Length: 371
Ligand code: VJV
Ligand code: CA
Ligand code: ZN
Image (cartoon, rainbow, N blue to C red; front, side, top):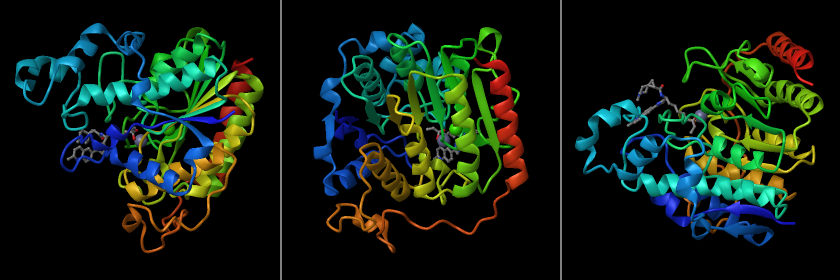
């Protein structure tokens, strides 16, 4: 069974705005690497021509009609006619109205919904959408570069055929929109690892564990800057292993935001692509169906390499350390021109004691509340 891989060539052309850190072009750079590594034959590739005819209805399973109508209607040219809504729906510098926004929302979200649907129908065991992962979007509000929450929508799609869905989030930011959507249910467990303390969106502390029958089913691992591979895996493994034991999900969504990598323009962790990929490998090792989606990642040359490497991982293929030297974007990858660039020498502000204690705390909470 091949891995399903969603990519649409149009996505690379959308521009949030001059100087805006979110650059959809990174998805195209990743695709180019996959192509030049000869990976596309190993994948079942689908594109935006597969966008479901019901996509607008699908969006309304989470978002309100007013909000969807606004996104559908507003353009950079008519923006002034919608100023009240613009403010009410939290548009602005982080979430600008750009040319083609509605098409961008539909194209990126579709990849995650199609992937979830393919898993539901047993057509694929693993599905990938690097153009998804917009974990901050709320029911009727944009937030943190996110307009439509494909993480929530694909969870809802998976719930049609599965009783327990696990959502894991290794983006450096807290997956607040997904957590909020499923805060009071035990049918989707959310688990986010993130920088916490004076950092967007300022939520996701240990004690935020869910509410009502959902108590215990929101898992948060707040971290400080400088997380390196050893530290990350040291906390990731026991937390995920315990979730697999106690919750025993039938299917997993992994939001693999690449802003947790060393040298990210917005991030402050110090993970190598190997360390980031080790999380993907570990999640895959449980043998459950996985929907693998993108997210943050603002140093483009690292994002594309990371996601290409991780596509290799889910296909069971370790890509050559040396980048294909005919890649269209080869110039981005100097001076090393390797798949796995080295990390920085920044200080790790997470002590081993803090990490051990945090893992212990989360594991204890899970054993107490989840069964
Ligand atoms: O920290 C914030 C919010 C502010 C208000 C808006 N200004 C622009 C920034 C401070 C409080 N927003 C964060 C949002 C991070 C979103 C991360 C998304 C993901 O990776 O988790 C998932 C895809 C933030 N950090 C940095 C910026 N905004 C930022 C936005 C810009 C910018 C520079 C930095 C927007 C436009 C331009 N430059 C030109
Ligand atoms: Ca996260
Ligand atoms: Zn992020």
